[in-house]
Length: 231
Image: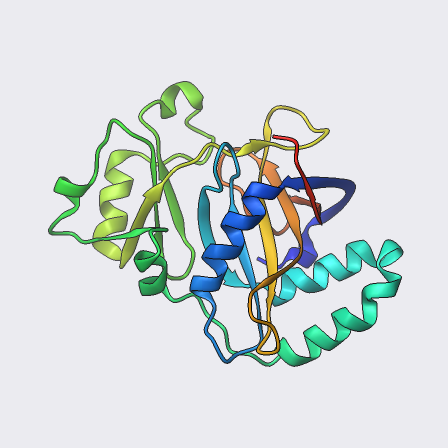
């Protein structure tokens, strides 16, 4: 879903320096060298980075520009230059590269019984982004909070090419009721003129429930590119 369908917040949060360094290292491994791209790295920083996805970050870069225009006037020409070079890049998520870097593991109909532990929380997703969440305490957390049953998980495995990753509890959203959860999308400019990815900022994306994604019904705000040393 498009981020343009989300509501925007003026709440700006900052990121611990350690998370920035971890994200930069991972993005450098995910970057198709020789191409000018924006990479959006989704994560749930809580003691460690906890990365969950990476994707073309061009639309997110445009959203950052829109939300930050009032205090980025001196940087706008730089933004425009970066975006002009990256706008036609055909960047897609390489699932094999995500697997190589430990973001997820392939699950097949003939091996899921050995690879799934129903006593722990996990996510399954296919290449189109459809996601199922299993949590052993789903009845306590709420059956209507975007969790799937065991039978739904098994059907999903049999119907699609799927990948498993750990389920990290979403973070509390800023200045919202406890029902609202969020994750971070850190956006890096990966330019052939630079030797390493450069963090241009990020977005926090929030929604009711435990399955959080941008689009209608969500709220998006800015993450400052300037690090904070607070935990």
